[in-house]
Each structure stands twice: as structure tokens, then as C-alpha cells.
Image (cartoon, rainbow, N blue to C red; front, side, top):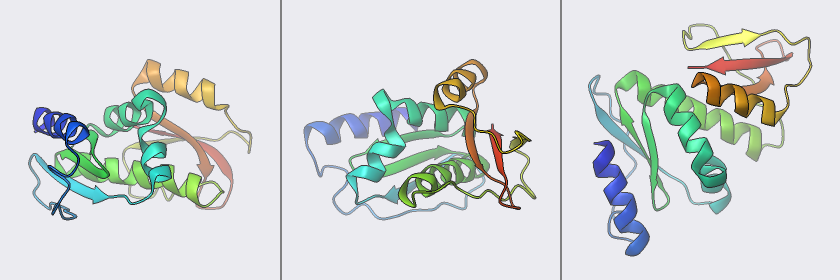
Amino acid sequence: TCAEVEIMSSVEKNDPGTFTSGCEEKRSLDEGIDFDCIHFSGKRSVGRIIGNNGANLTRLSRASGAFVQFVGHILHIAGTLGERQRARDYVEFELDMDENGHQAQIQTSGRSDVTVVRTGGLYVLGPELRSIENETGTFCMDALDDKGVQQCFIFG
């Protein structure tokens, strides 16, 4: 499935519309390996998810366990149901922080994929977070906890 999505992405770059024309949103409830499709209309959102040289796609894939790749403007998420849901959540956290001009507020109850580091309201700088992510294979972000207090969240 991962190789299939990579090939689709490559073909779509060379011949736009090959795979995106008629492609509908898809959210699979299959527990096994499958893929979801999420449409994005804004270049800003697509760029935010991809990141510099694909860095955000790599971060999201590594931490969620899913394979995350754009085919044109359609985000494909391949993996098990749990992996796909984590990837969807992480994409939502990224976009919420960016599009609304404020930090995401993250509810941690019921999640087994997150560790909250109580930073006393202090920020961890982006380059430091990216370095930690690269070393640990996680997805990290400063965000608000359920009480509205700035914390550092480690996913993966």
C-alpha cells in the first residue's frame, strides 16, 4: 500500500488529475491495513502538512506508525485503524495550531500515545523539538492542556 501511494504521488506530479480526479474522501473502519483519503483545497494547509522538504510528513508518519503522503491535494494515510487515527489526529493538531493563529488544545484522557511534559508554561523552541523528534522518532509540540496551560506534548 505504501509503495502504491508513492507511485500514485509520482504519477500525479507528472500528470495532474490521473489519481485525484474523481477521488472521494475516504475513512476506512477496517482494523487491518487500509488507507484513508483527506482532501485539502488550500495550498497553505498542504504546505503546512508537508513541511520543509517533507519533514512534517516524515514526523507524522514516524510517530503515528502510518504512511502519510500527498497524491496531489489529497492526503493518503495508510496503516492500521489505530495508526490512521493517530495520523489524522496529528495532522489536525498541526493545522489547528497554524490556521487559527493560536495553539492547539489537546485532550489527553483516553490517549495512550502521548506523554505530557509539564514545562511550567515555558515553550520549547522549534529547532530543539525537531532535534528531539529526529532522535526519538516522535512528534512533539507545544500546546495547551485541557486546563489551558502551556505544556510540551510528545506523541508516538
